[in-house]
Image (cartoon, rainbow, N blue to C red; front, side):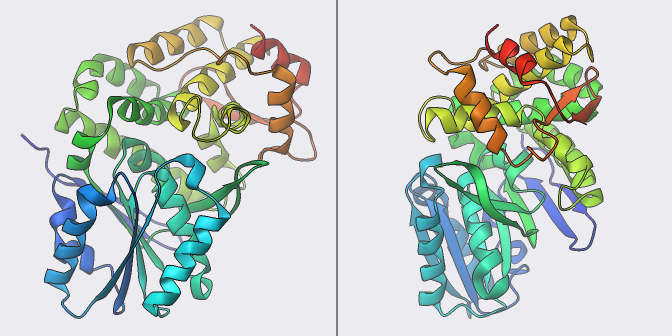
Length: 364
């Protein structure tokens, strides 16, 4: 039995609503209510578009027969989150004749959401974007908060903009077609919220691991809503990552270095890299005396319970990873910066971390 729809309100200078529930992509009234003008561009990828694009477009047309709807489909995968594909979405908006009251619907995972959102941020200096996440990772992380970006060879998400969505519509039935590996990857970001601000959430997740991995609607809806509440609260207080919002990057400095060094689209996916990164951050915290080693071991046990990796992939040189970290957006004039923890639920930013301590953790 499907869980009832949940709504999370995001406040701040550009407030919006997150809708979480089953069958929402077929709710034309809800989708069309977000469109101010007469143009809508659905951006999706080669995996998701065949499954859901037509249904979403049909729902929009039924509710708004006057809408002119375009579709742009990119190849699936992190390797497609490029400036070239950003340019292709801009071209699609131009071909549609999109005006300043047009709307981009980002139908897919984090790659589609980031790229389509960035194009919306730039077309005519900013048009509406509605996030339609179809992966757990996107539902609890990339679709919320307004970060948009593309990757370049030097690093992940180095070119982008802050552009809050007009709305987020998370249809949980799309998770039924999600490969198990991708579901687990999303659960890594869910675990992150427990690690940084909500220690009891870690116990809740541990108790419901089997239901979550089996795709139980009620358990997933609760996990998504709880994660979105945490992210919404943090991004509302710090929309442009000048302070507290950086805590959402727990594990990500390591993760982004791993992804860049492996080459996007090969090796670990983003959620898997975050799982490894969180464990490395917990071990670095213990190495620096901020937290206990037993807490890092408990985190490792939880990650393994969800079928996530808990070891650095073979063949990655510590010095190469360190070089990537120095280019990371979180690295500033005071040297290497990491989100570390004082134990579960208590994360903080630490600047000027000794590279030797980082190297020691990478070689353990």
